[in-house]
Length: 224
Image (cartoon, rainbow, N blue to C red; front, side):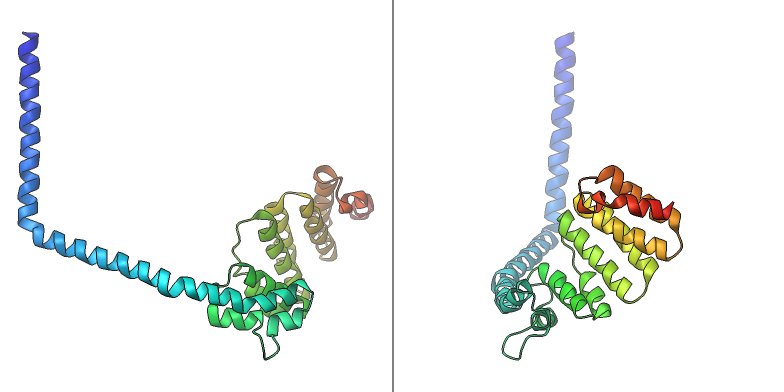
């Protein structure tokens, strides 16, 4: 009896399988023209994307990196105006970004932003820094902190303090202490001593071995 039940179940399974195969064949026969058309279109799109990446995008990235190299060298040497604006013979970072966007790499936005910041061009600095989207926490935090510096230069102190707090949260290491100290000082200047004290005590509790931590007690006393 048990064997009969097994045979019945196998017969049902086989029947269902055959029905499925039959329906699949029927669907294919009814729509094979459409299926092959779609498959051909997808293949053409894939080949077009591959050709664009290999023949256009990647060579442009190489060209952009080559054009940016002199400006990046100037940036490394602290020659911020030359780095940002070039000298007529080589492109500055601003020119590289205008011509190639981010094809020279994410770092060009950070470098251009810091260069503009050093030159006191705060609005331009913010424009570049906000386009930097690096994932590494330390450099991402630095970009946000530099936005804070730009806001401070524009005397937009609430925005500056908020940027410093975000940078500290993003870094979460000894670099965070410097950002928290900047935020605390701004909060004091804006009359928010409670928020300033919170920044200072966080430095004392979480980053006592930082440079800022060695001298933080005087800030705490001042804010209390």
